[in-house]
Amino acid sequence: MNDNPSCAKCPVLVTGGAGYIGSHAVLALLDAGWQVAVIDNLSTGFRFAVPDHVPLYEGDIEDAALLARIFDEQGIGAVMHFAGSIIVPESVENPLKYYHNNTAKSRALLEAAVNGGVKHFIFSSTAATYGIPKVSPVSEDSPKQPINPYGMSKLMTEIMLADTARAHPLNYCALRYFNVAGADPRARSGQSTAGATHLIKVAVEAALGKRSSVSVFGTDYDTPDGTGVRDYIHVSDLADAHVLALEELIRRPGQSLTMNCGYGRGFSVLEVLDAVDRVTNRKIERFMGPRRAGDPDSLISDNRRIRETLPWVPKHADLDQIVTHALAWERKLTEIRGEA
Image (cartoon, rainbow, N blue to C red):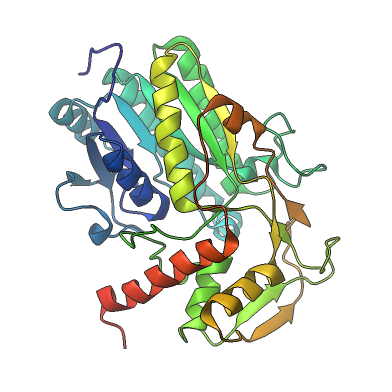
């Protein structure tokens, strides 16, 4: 049990640290001089994504005995929580899976953190908590009206965090992500999930011949070129925001935070595909299809709060750079897996 009230550079437990965003958070913490441990059940994560010198506990975040052992063995003072399920259509088809993995398991983790004397909790939330916003850019104070179980499962966890912070000596930061993309600039990690649905991941796979084409869902949106506009944030900039948020929680132990993570500007689907064409110097085949249910015309973050609260200065806010890093990782992933 960690009784250090200040928790300055205390060991951090990263849940889901073998996954896409979690593995980048591990790298950002290590780069900033933090001690890190990871818990991941490896259902969607990869052992190779965790550096060899980082303790990796293969297990589930609802295993109270395992968590108690980790907190004790590692002297954990803070948790960064990424573990969960993230596929929106699947959440509609199987809502109970999402309320179990994302909400019930988060409750178990939160209880273990309180019992283990953890003082600070960073939560991987989502812009899906806003549903289909009437106004874009979207601020943190915009109405929270999720339209799918994924968004609702994350919002329910935010509510649990707020209630727990009022009752216990724990503060938290909920970071609401917009569209995360790219890979570590040094190609130490990246999006490795087979069959991923992220547009830039899909597009670079197509550019390398791993897919035959890219489907464009909807060409009649109220946007300049008719395709949906999204706010793409480089995963390493996002990971840096987590480290800075943790430092802020430690500086202000009585204060909790909720902040959007995005660049405050968007690109359309066709603009993203054009960027991949530019970077790869080849033309991806595109198939124009109908809209998907629940996709807003435009979803862009109002990121003033994070810029005013944290000394966060994005280093990779360039679409071609995001694509370049994603492409480099995709090529490395081919080598890791020994693919032809």
